[in-house]
Amino acid sequence: MSNDTPSAIVVGASSGIGEALAREFAAHSYEIGLTARRRDRLELIGNQLPTQAYVARMDVTDTADAREGFRELADAMGEVDVVVLSAGVAPGNPELDWERERQTIDVNVRGFTALATVAMERFEAQGHGRLIGISSVAAHMSVGDVPAYPASKAFVSNYCDGLRYRARGRDADIGVTTIEPGFVDTDLAGGTFWMCSPETAAAQIYRAVRRGKRKAFVTRRWRLVAGFLDRLPDVVARRLFS
Image (cartoon, rainbow, N blue to C red; front, side, top):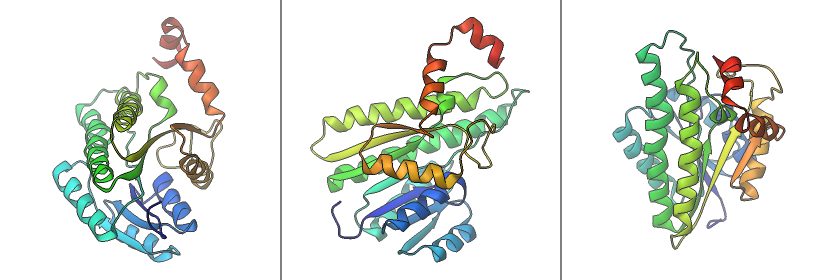
């Protein structure tokens, strides 16, 4: 890290994995930038952290405002070592309602990309940094009742790969880590199989970041499920997920 006191911005820090990661990084002496839509919740979390906290309300679906808000937050913090993109939604949609599909795409794809690009812009300007993209094991499947969510997470995983490859050609120390959680005990949890707590997820993600990993599954056993899904014949997948 470039400074004696490292720093991290967590987008989507008001609950779930994002909140747990903010607390985990703060426990390891990081100054934290907290962003989400609920400013009151962010201020409550920030007051509980053992390190300096910066709070910025952000709606990632308003991409122009979110990108400008990110720049202002990063300027206030100085150099930023880590950016975590954890904002996401997962509405069920068996009726294929357009508004639900649009919301998922706006948050998980447009919002993610808007913040990922401005974070990489910041890293390239300062010469270092690590982007953490919170994807999902769902990126390895397609589900008839929730078509947009797995597709959006497949986008996140593949986009992180592209940013990682791009960073190799830049004269800067930039890393990209893709995190693919299974079931985590949050509002977005889609099941209880092999479920872990947000705190367990955050601890494993922090270790992956410190080790400079390109990709990590949370918990690690979900790697087996992802591998199984990647090899699943379409005729079987249709029976399982339609």
